Length: 96
Ligand SMILES: [Zn+2]
Ligand SMILES: [Zn+2]
Image (cartoon, rainbow, N blue to C red; front, side, top):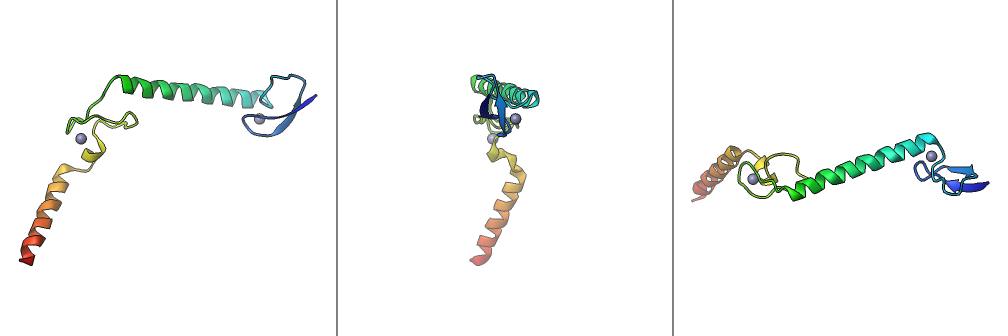
């Protein structure tokens, strides 16, 4: 018997099979599932890098990790920004 550590749950287990890396079928399945999910995610990211997406609002290139259709700069409402700017100007004028 060989004493090993499960690569998924890190529990120690005994096995006769030298290439066994998981303590149970459940751990093996969970690890396989995660690997598939990870590969799927990588594929999605790669796809996004290949197909360049641009912000719907300003047209700048979107990050491959950005799920929305607008860039982070445009996420905040532009009307809110201009309103805030007007208020700032108003305050500056009051000082004079
Ligand atoms: Zn395990
Ligand atoms: Zn934008």
